[in-house]
Image 1 (tube, rainbow, N blue to C red):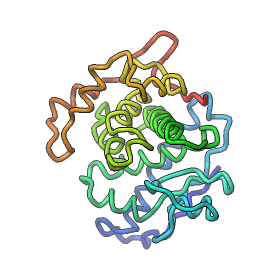
Image 2 (image 1 turned 60 degrees about the horizontal axis):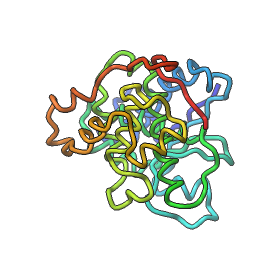
Image 3 (image 1 turned 30 degrees about the horizontal axis):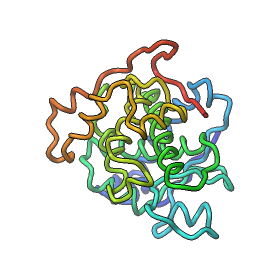
Length: 260
């Protein structure tokens, strides 16, 4: 069983300070345990070893850790899978910044989101070149991450996908949309993984259709596009997006991982 390496672990008996590296480490530990259960429950991933999850030291990046000889690119990623070491690594600086800005009730789900993205990166083919390929890969990872999140105990206990939806939408700035897709595309991909859209899977064909905007429920995609920033979002509008997993022909709930 994989062992989680945590930096800045809290001292025994001491409560981590709010927003501290120790608090973030505790959140990573908890989220990893939840996603390990989801990984073990999925028929595709159950036979695969669960990757080690590591919170990087301050100043270290995912790209620099996994591919030190490759020039850095933008946008910087918060989580990714290092094929060379077989582990999911998390950029402590980027994750801590987002975690510190999140509401207390949303922080741990934000951490879960990024670990799920790193795990999904493990399941995808080797990244190719070109912006279109990058967008498709980002949406597939977001969707597959949604599948793992949907099977986690935390998601099973609550139908509120709001923090996860906000995490997907806010993952990258809009200036990078040509490389990582739009906020609404990422939000739709996440909800697809959770089983809350009419798109049946996370496979390359369905996600390529999302890139083109050719989804079976365009009104939902438009509604995600119209969502205001988290601070101004109305609960009634968010509630319309938080449907439970919908069974589709040959697609049961929770959804399962696809690797093509």
